[in-house]
Image 1: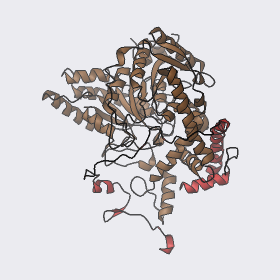
Image 2: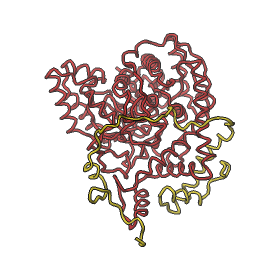
Image 3: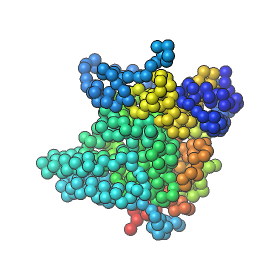
Image 4: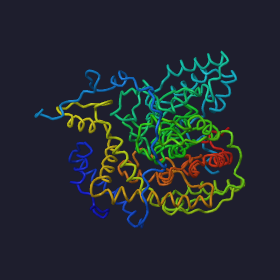
Length: 103
Length: 502
């Protein structure tokens, strides 16, 4: 269980970069680690706040399901959408191998 | 006003200018009655852009040919007896995170360079239906993350009042376009102050509507629970006119408020007699420059002189707004920006496998600040840290909403600075992200609460740069907020920066 008093480490930053699908150089890793640590240290002031029994607010507007009538409406033009993709084939998005050499 | 009288002379090298053909209200009235030609209006603004854009760099793209053709169409409509609408022939600049079908929309990011959206944002459709003419897409901090436009992949925008200073951000291009007279009005988006702060720094009016008042459909998402589209203008009346056009329910946005709305432009001149207005003590202390605080106090006095009941208000939890925001907004951003993976649109950097392609694309396509926020958000949401960071921030958000609600039991509106300082110089805050984030201290609480706020120019600082005063209102409190803004505008010192000189 993490706490704000724990300073973010270089290994933490390398891990979150991996999770976020970003490659970072050694120099960037040092830089991001100190910058993120400074922001998180500032954020630690909320630790002083007693939030016992306080409900979280994820959204300022009371969200509920919004439904539309179940009728056919306009959609985006498929060829216009696919024309913007880096690679397409047979009316679909095309990507490189997803299983690497094993495929 | 010390500093104001000699403003004109000390602004040598300034590109600040009034719109060449008047306000949006004046232009629309002139075109609808056949006294002005839309083509002449567009040509005057395109000439203004030609003259100043190389200095200011407000735009990522200028739509000159399209704007001229659109103006000719408006003129044909008027000649045929058809009313083009409330913004007939009014040039407008659009922040480049609003989708425009077939027109490049980049978010000032390499990852979307060259992308042509297959649809228009709802606000773009509404503007077209009202007769407005898009003159260009404006520069921003990449994906609206920043307070200076220095994070744009295409180079910063410069403040028209002093080209050595930032215009603020993230909607710096939209603020600068209006301050430079390139267009009388523009649209920006505000997630933590991105309309109000650049409006303050560029000496124009900037309005962040209540969350859900304006559709977000086609606004490229940064932090979905905070983002809101809103107007920039040189006058409060123009802000209200533009808000009238863009506000309203949209079935394409599930967070759009399904309520009938008043006409804002019809009520702005009703004054502030009897309105209770609170000066927020938490936003008047440490970190606020003395010249800024002095202008805010002068604004409070002006409102009181106009009949408002002014007192001191306390909203204690907003001291924690910045901390909560810089956990919540990056958390939402890290999720929203996961879609840029080189598969469906935008940049792809080829690699042997899809996973490697995604890493290569995102690493090459995103700038440093965007990567920083994605990582911050990923961390705040990651296993083991979620409760301590994101979860705690959401509870702080509840406290902020609660404290605002308590203040709004006593007061109709709240008053504060918009930005802690006037416009700073390029490079002053880029090395230390936290110092940049502190610019948003006064504006962030309103986004967390989902409320409305407006920045109105109210004189100049010791450096002869514009100062903005922020009026905050509870959700759907735009009517009293605009009334107070109009009173402040009328009471503002007559300076070169408020467009009232001469």
